[in-house]
Length: 613
Image (cartoon, rainbow, N blue to C red; front, side):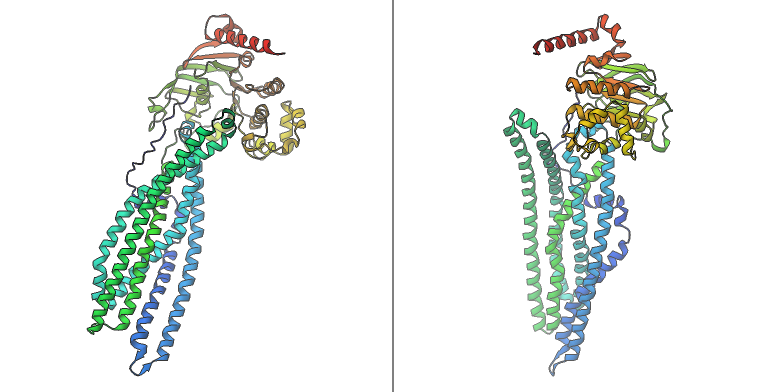
């Protein structure tokens, strides 16, 4: 049955992001960021206080070090030394603070990255199919990288500069209440502007982060599909599709840049207005004798220490909103409940030995967005299937495309859960079996023969981690593949390339069969291992399968009916229902779907033979 995937809504309409709630939730999932935070804040306080010393020293020098009798050089020298010490302490505190934040950030976010990656693997195959791979990759790479940049730079800026602004305001209040009120009269306008832009930047940056994920997905698909694109001459179409994704990313980034530039311009205008107001009012107060020249000059420095964070706040807000958007996307992944959940400590282990497989009234419907398997109301892929497969039996599953064959296999291996009914392995409901037991005892060999970058040896060892090279060679021997292995340029050390691209389809299948043999499962599910291979490789695969399937319960999804002939029993599916059950010889003679399929397959084989030279 073809999976019907509903694409996510890519509209630019977004609900406002609750930035503070997102940050609190993110911090709760990253406890390393909270450890030792008190010391980090103490260092931030020391660094902040050190910056205030300079304006205070200037005021003291102008008002106390310069008198009608001349300059008090001793007093001036003491103020200068005090200023130098303050600068040194500030620099040291800032350096240590940066180091602590860098270490805490990388440790905590690496753990968050691992957690997100594991959770993605826990999601069902249906959920993963509904998302572009690049989007999921972006959520554990670029989105978390954005959080890291914020924590190590913008977050630090907000902490230190925010403390600097508050401390500067306190000192200003002590120096001159008139000048302080002048600044406070204009501050609400600045704060309102920040809040107005912050709300819009939050939504805008969430769109940008989503566009980045879509762009990565489109690029990954275009690169991986390059051979098909060239073969069908669809370069123009792919370029047009990719250009559309790039344009959507550009439009989102430009829109966000517009908000950013607007915020920077408004911030610059407002801070310049505050400086001018302080200068005018301070001059009038100094002329009237209500304050000293040193106080006015120091006040101007303090105003700069207060408004400078506001000028830089725009850039920090950019990073903060992008980080919040990235954090929200990571949390969205972690908040997605796995459709196929591991019962964990409450689960059971499968009984020892070859497994009986039993379906009792099993129905599977594809879930629509927001639904799980039990709530699913989508297309029905399998309906009312009840069947028992004996231990050590070899059962073939046949049917036309979309009949429910693959769905049957995925339910038997619990790659998906049923909508109705139950699947039992060894008498235990499969949903109650611990993953540690299920994945060790039940193995499915997919049709595409997926391999990972590395050598044949490394790929085969995944079936049994820690097995020696000699053990791998013995497995090749047991499956009758020693001769084929010897034909390879580097034997077990032959590199397979990305996704096994250095090997042929049949050779990749041979490697996956050896990997499955090392896993030593009690239930083996094969998704037609001999399709799309040459006769010589098919003979090798068939011999390997004969050795591999001995003593095990085997389910073969047979696309070619030559594979079904060798099975003890054949299950025939049609439009999601099991319509026939029996051995090949019986089903071939009685009217029904199987005889029709077999006759069509025989005719196709004759036609192919007639065109051979």
